[in-house]
Image 1 (cartoon, rainbow, N blue to C red):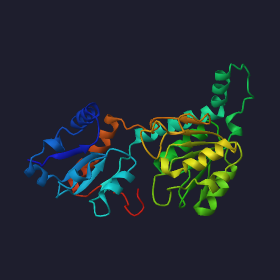
Image 2 (cartoon, one colour):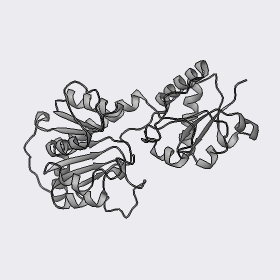
Image 3 (spheres, one colour):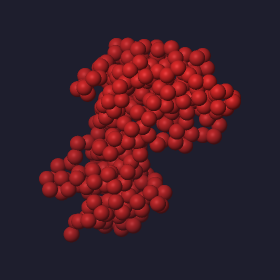
Image 4 (cartoon, rainbow, N blue to C red):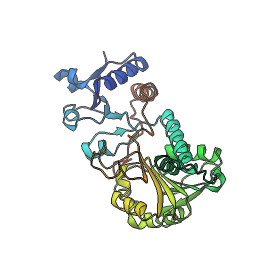
Length: 315
């Protein structure tokens, strides 16, 4: 009889039940149990853990783990909490997540392209005025990050008629119709020529504070910003200053330094900011479970651990 797979996380009861049900359906041959229900012998035997922001102290009580499967695409918190000595961590690479993120990028790019923040301000002031229409072909979108999510977003934007450029730390294959910028010298060039900048970068030592006062100043005057990556990539005080100065027209923020966003944050009330509650790329239990099932079955059949996170890079 196979050892159980441990399920650990800080989900609410309904979220946990939904994920466990989806995993049970995708992996009927496995026994997947919440950590709290495992006895000492079962914890000793466990080789695989499926996690969603787990308590590191509970992970430490599974001494014979071979690898950890995350239910999230972003793993910076997991890497930070478990440290460099952790067993291999496998991030979720889910085609459905890429689709929903690309959908969100396109939706909120349209939001800025069609001047929705301005129409909201006009509604609040009781102003009836039509603004000049700007077609997608005249709005250059700059993507920061060209991984799985960035590539999917780039393709959707190109299909919608937007000129798209993308920046990555190293040279990567570009989707058709996308202009590429690479390395430290390529970032200012992308920022200076983009009408809307979309951040899809992971949070690492190299990206923390990347969009600081100097780089925000390098943005094209009147540009908009969409941050669907991680909050600490953008320096909040510098962003507010750039908005107040009129250098940036609007910022759509779905990720923050602290989540939930504290009630006293000035971002809530700033007229140049749209606050979203981290909804741009939701993990769907059914699609996530299918990806996890494929990884678990491959491991059972071959003994090879799926491609893991590079802890030094943070993703």
